[in-house]
Image (cartoon, rainbow, N blue to C red):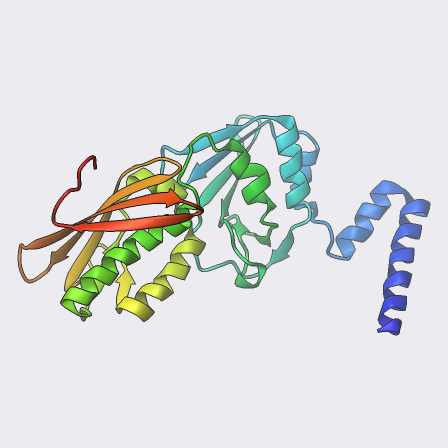
Length: 277
């Protein structure tokens, strides 16, 4: 342990000395060689980017434009410390970043929110992939939210679906081919992230023997479709329809969730819309 501390001290001394005697530019070069700095985004630092458009991949109407110089500088600081890697994540991207350099030149990147470093690159273009700090989620994206979503949306959204599945499976038994489709739940698609979907995908399979729909042509025994009916910060309402491939008969659940005393209380109503829904 003592030897490691000495090595760290020597390494720190070398870095500080290099900065003192060689100046900022040379120090940046040392940081690049040590993998502490990425030079691929210097065009942002040089002031050539005046506008950045951030677009949700699931909700085409949800986009915001960043022109604030401080926000663009903050993004550069995050990207300049990114690490270039060869493999990107297998998850679908959540956002597209378009950085406009003049009128005709656009630097385009796909971004996966909330991804852990061990899972591969979370920012990538056509030819390069990077592991970027999740500070982008809080420092850049969250600062431009102008829509008030339910408190802890991830919890209430997926738990409300699970509550319906608990009730349905208890009454009907596990289906051989139960498929969940949330692809048309457009009201809240902007809040859905690939990392959350991946986590819920495992729960679906393990607990309900169900899969998340990716291909509209996929065969199913029962298809579960979710539609968000309305929400505020402390209230979330949805309807869940279960269709059978063997008949025209459908079962419908209405879900009312309320945030009370620091937790979500979820109620389901089978085939009957509750009052004030």
